[in-house]
Length: 379
Image (tube, rainbow, N blue to C red; front, side, top):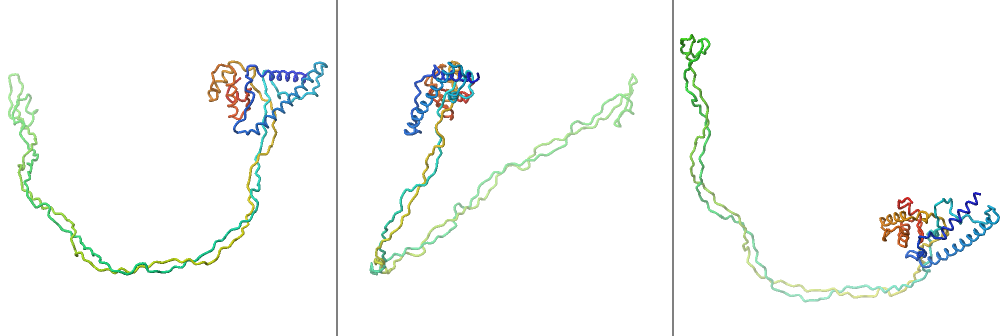
């Protein structure tokens, strides 16, 4: 019973893939060769895809025959079917696409012969020896030469300004002095009370009709200290002598007068080079060894293969989900079209460009769920 449910689920997935998720534009199914892939590699990849598609068609035909047998006999035997035609561990509500995983290559280094060993004939030129000979170029002569005058530097001290006098005003000079002056003169006052209660300055006492005793008390004088500015020396003028000003100057004077003298010009000689043969020309044979170069070549390590990958389909390709996808691709800088919630060539192209840049499964007519998850969307 379990095998029968698996076959039914596989048939449903195949039907969904056959319809191509109706809202997807199939005009972008052919992938043009890029600058990175050569034309030969592109043609080989296309042939390989054709072969894989033919094998897939054969397996789908075998699956159809097995389904027919199951429908007629009611048997759950799946010996004639190939379970690789179905996604592994499929879940309800999910769609899958078979993706061509390109072959993998490794680079091997190989040493190859670039030039065979050979022989080169080298001509050794003749060698010569140069002999120098001394020859007379100009006869000896005399000429009259002027001996210039000689000069010496003399330093002298000269007066620039003579001594003079001028009147200088000396301002008045003041100083502060303090003086003690009388503030209030001594005087007497009458005070009530007996003489014993007064100070020793009581002069006399008297009794009036009321019986009170009045004492005449002497009040001493009081003084205060004041400061004042006193002229010490008045302003005046005095005569000041300003000394003479001297400077040291340097001047050039003749020490000896100019004269003439007769100078003998010696004869001039030059060296003439004479070339003599030392060794004649000859030849030498030189062995040139073979040269090698290191080249890199690509060796295939794994063949192309088809793998199942979860993709968007009619189940989750709602307008809200497509709108969220277009907005995320636009923020990432890949989608330039309108955000209308409709899957079209621009949306597929933007999703494929994002997948290629992120090294995720990429196709021209489907959008991998790995792209959805990488964009941070929950669909």
